Length: 257
Image 1: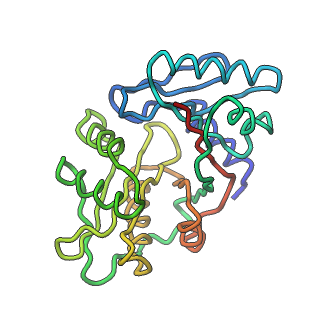
Image 2: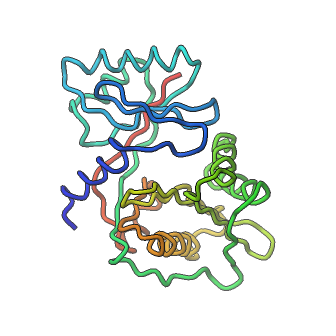
């Protein structure tokens, strides 16, 4: 993989030319900033920027004022190669709080082995309705120890909207939900995004996460996508590397509000 070329393609497809990730949200392009704006439970934030040193602080202040008037907490999604090089420090100086750093990992679907299956006794259930969304959200709260209210709202809106851009799946051991994940597919883009792969602690290390990655990758391949991308935590990065994903840069959410 040509890392420089693929990263440039990712920036163009998924950031500079971003589309809303759900019904009710909109993407706005203001000067050298691309942002998504939605309701309170939608993801609100800056997706892409092309800033120079002299103009960075003013651009940051503009976004703080804009989302402040809306009464929205928002995120500035910073990538390791974004300019200026001290943009993270400028965001902290403006009152943003950095969340844990993750690694942007990308794989070309033609290079992945997509035959991984869940372990014996575990089955994958496609999520299509509110009951399934609740299973996904419950698993995420157990796996990550975080509140899933926003994700619950957003996933239900995506699944019940007019566009077929999201695939969600929950792994069941008998009737017990033990792992869950979703995939977002932007029409016209070459990248499908794998999100939220989480397994409850007692079921980790049994190949369920790997099976969920393979399941979603097969769907992406069937729908004509060339790449899959993940914002990988330190826990998932080794698994993804063994599957053939390659690290291209880091990504850090900076939250304000």
